[in-house]
Length: 92
Image (cartoon, rainbow, N blue to C red; front, side):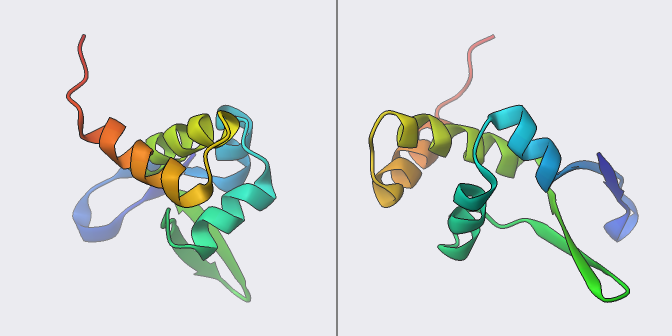
């Protein structure tokens, strides 16, 4: 997990490898979700390299989209269902 110190706040964000491992989504599918702007990682340049970091809200969105993709929904439908699911209050 990588800390992000923007605006004086510390947020713990996950790297691409951590998201892939935790959620179980293939790396190329994750990149496709980014390409379609369904998920938006934070980026940080270090020298010539750019690193992606995912805040918790994006990881939860990825998890929900992946769940619907595995059920056979197309990308747009999986994204829309995931957004609806994430709008619902969670019961404890």
